[in-house]
Structure formats: C-alpha cells, structure tokens
Amino acid sequence: MWWRSTVATTVSEGGRDADRYRSAQFGLSRLLVRDVRGLRRLIIPSRLRTSVPDWIAAVHAVVEQYAQTSAALSAEFYDAQRDAAGVPGTFTVPVADPPPEGRTEASLRWATKDVWERDPDVATAAQLEPLDVRLEQAERKAELVVQKLVADTGRDTVLEAVRQDRQATAWARSAALGACAFCKMLSSRGAVFAQDTVGFRAHDGCHCAATPVFAGQRFELSPHAREWARLYQEYAAGHSGSQLARFRRALAEHDQYPLPGSF
Image (tube, rainbow, N blue to C red; front, side, top):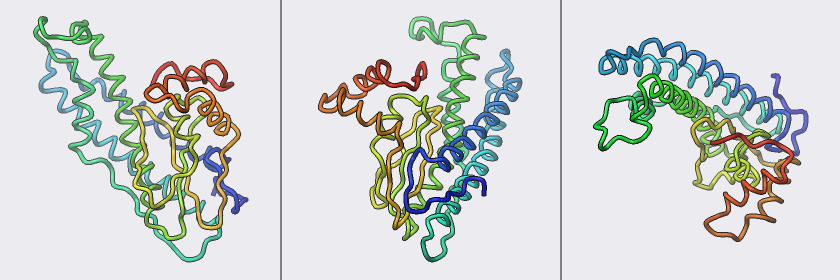
C-alpha cells in the first residue's frame, strides 16, 4: 500500500503516512466539490420552492457516494497502519455509514436559508442581497457543509476503530501546515487516548484527519506541531476566554506556515 509505514515503533500526526492519507481525503473533497457544483443547474431561480428540494436530493446522492469512498480510504489506512505497527491478532474496521438523508437535508437547508424572500423589515443584510448573490453564497456554504459530512464519515471510521480495537491505544489529529488556528491548536495537543469520550471537533471545510496509535508505539508530535504547541504555551495558555484569539495572533506573527483567510 502506498501509505504503509516502514517504522512501527514511532508514530506522528505529521508523518509521511498521515500526510499522504490526509492528501488523499483532500483530493476526494475536491472531486466532491466539483460534482456538487455541477448540480447547481438544478436550482431554477424562478422555481425555488420546487427546484431546491430536487437539488437537495441530488446532492445527498453524491454525498452518500463520496462518504462511502472516504470511509473506505480510512479503513484501508487504518489496516495499513495496524499492519505496520506489528500488533497481534486480527481486526475488522467498522466502516462508518454515510450521513442519513435527514442530516444532509438539514445541512443544505441551513446553507440555503438566506435564498428565500423575506420581509425587508426582518431580513438580514445577507437576505437583502440580489438573488444571484444569495445563490452564490448558498453554493459556497453548501460546498463546505457537504465536505464536512463526507470527511466526518472517514474520521468516524478511524475513531470508532480505535475505540473497538484492543490493540489501539489512541488517535491523534493530523492538521495541514496551512490549517486554521483552531485545528493547529487541537493538533498540537497530541494523542487522544482510546478510552476518552472526546469526539473529533471539526468545522465546515475542515481537512484534518485522525491517525491511530497502537500498543508498543510511541507518539511524537511533528516538528511543526511542536512549534504550534510552543506558541500556544508562550502566548495563549492561561488566558481564559481569549486563548484562540491570542494563539491566532501568535501564529500570524511567528508561525512560518500561512494561516487561511478564515475558517
């Protein structure tokens, strides 16, 4: 397998295998967005009430297909990492189901909530924009929410495998070098033990992934995650209520890797 690790005793959230796996999921997200954009033609401005539900149904079908692929990629990655760790016994990865139709519909209805005509006295600034602008904004929101729905399926596959696998001890968040401050902060905290109930916190458009850690392996933060941890401790820790804002400022001033414009 192209992401099989050659070192079983040490694992990092920023190792070669984790980076390749995250890149594969990112590539899948780009294809997803391409296909969702192609469905935009189903929304007919003069017939929003009837065309938007048809668009939602079509997008859900695409999300379901890509979510299955994301889960399969995650299961393959988990199996490869488990083999590389050399742990005993066999284990079947519990592949997560695609998001239910109701969840996809709710996400897309949120993305399109500003499209509908409103009473000017109660409408927000976004809802008073011309229809073509509102549709463009809705399309962007929809791309972000469906990306999260698909990526969550892959992340849930790894997390549930870690919880069920007796040879798995923890998982770690793998964030890209250009990730947002929120993701860099969580990634710098290192491994989350398997018995912990904490879930994978992700925002719309998040491309972070989960990397499993197995019995006998030693987890090490990558050099860039160690730098993020240092910046957090030096500039943000101990400032209740403003840690993220302070950390974001520290990254902007001292981190060699660029922050995205927003998240």
